[in-house]
Each structure stands twice: as structure tokens, then as C-alpha cells.
Length: 381
Image (tube, rainbow, N blue to C red; front, side, top):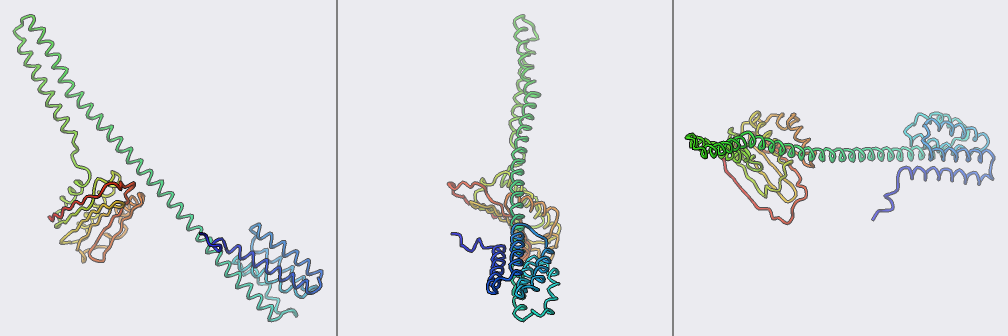
């Protein structure tokens, strides 16, 4: 439930202060049996207050208020209290330079300690409410910027996901075209040649030509070649490198600087293709930085898949050799952080114990009906 004070703003407080000041002057005017100079001043100040409430008047307009008050003092001494309004407005708008003419007031015979106290109260009230107004504007600007950043990140995320889908689709089409071309060029040609050879054999056999057996052997040879080409084509359908966790094992196998302890927890089937596209280069970047900047004796790699997030941790014990470039703002690490941020994740580093790189990525639309199986491979090489 919203608190009734949640709608209270600095602008509301400023309006309340102005109304209170005008009511105070009105009571003084009624107490003095209604001087004509007082009513003119009150009307002028009311008009200026309404104008400031409705429009964004420049700060120098308070000079008109001060001039009106100084003129009204000649006919109504209590008009001096009206100077509190322009003092408040100047401090509220952060323009104290425009209240310098009020410095002449102490030299007037109407000046008293009560006037000074009212002026100080007006200045403090304006400064406090003005600070409140500035803080509110800064918070609004920051909130707008955060909303804009979130909107841009969502757009970037959608673009990346769409690009991944398009790349996968193009790769699929390219592979289909390659298979079709290979079947046409190799298997298709051999089968066509075999059919023609069999037709020639049938014709030669009917005529009793002695070359008929030779033509039959040629047809058999062509059929054998087409079977070989077909078998090779089917064999090549299998990808050279396995996707998923096998790719991570392959990256770790190629790291020979020191032993690697690679452990996996959770169901890796939950990791989508676009997340693998971030995890692979992150692991490569971490191991590359270790080779360049550290001298570890052991590397610990942990890959955790929970129902909602993925966490990749790469840690080594090369404390004395860790260079600032490893945990700084290298180009590779900056690019990876942008890619992780685009999908709602993050990449951080920790040098408390050795050097550790942590990549956390969210899993979208997790299948809660599946229980995560645990797979652990603590092989040390």
C-alpha cells in the first residue's frame, strides 16, 4: 500500500511555503486595516507566485518582487516582510546573487531583528527545498538512464539471439547445400553411370556381343564406387567437434601449462547454443591469460548448471605472477563482459586467493519438471 507521503515532493513543499508567506502578509494587511499599498503589493506577489507555479520564470525575475516590496514599504511598513518571498525564490532556484539588493534593507528605518530572522528562515527554507529539488531531478535522470540502458540491453539481447538463430539457420542451409552437391557430384554421377552400363550390358547380351561381361563388370564397379561415396557422405554428416561439454573438455585438453582439474555439476543439456557461444571464448580467454601472465601449479575449473543460472569458475594459484592486465580491462575481457551483459549475465574477477574468473549467465525458461542430474569428472592432468 502506498504511503500518503510518497506523493509529497519538493515542488509541493515550495508551493505550501509560498502560500503560507502570502497568508502571513494578508493577515498583516488585515491587521493594519487594509492599507492601499499593501493590497497592491499582495496582488502583485500573488500574480508572480502563480506565474512561477505555472511557468519556468528565470531567476532574475525576483528583482521585480524586491522592487515592488521596496516601493510598498514607503506606504506600508509591513511590506518589508514581503522580501522573504524573493529571498526564498532565489535560494530555491540556486541563484543567491539576485538577492543582493536586499543588502540595502538594514539601512532602512523599518529594519529590525524580526525581519532578519524571517529573512534567514526564508533563505534556509529555499536552500533546503532547492537541494531536495536538485536531488529529485538527479534521481529522475539516473532512473531514466537506467531504464534506457535496460531497454538497450534488451534490444541488444534480442539482436544477439536473432543473430544466433540466423547464423544457425544459414549454417544448416549451407550444410544441406554441401550434402546435396556432394550427393549430386559423386553418388549421383556414379549411379547414373551404373544405370547406363547396365542398359548397355542388357543390349549387348541380347545381341550376343562378347564384350557384354566387360560392361557388366563396369556397372558393378560403378555401383561399388557409389556405395563408397554414399558411406563417406553419411560419415561426414557427423560434426568434427562435439558441441556442448565435449568442447570444453577439448579446450582443457589443449592446455598443457599445468594440471587442470575440470569438474561439471548439473544438466548440460539446459545450456543453449547462444550461451555456449559465450562460455567457450570465456574459458579460452581465462586459460590464455593464465599462460601469458601467471605461473600456476594447478588450475581449477568448475562448471555449475543450476535450474536458473550457469556459473563457470576458472581459478589458478599463480599469485606472485598475476599481472594487472589479467584482471584489468583487456580488450578480450571487455568484449566478453559486454556479451555476457547482453544476455543478463556478468563476468567478474577475484584476486583474493590466486586469480579467479567467474562467469554467471541466466538460463531462460528453465524446465522445472526436469531434475538436474549431476555429472562430475574430477580428472587431473
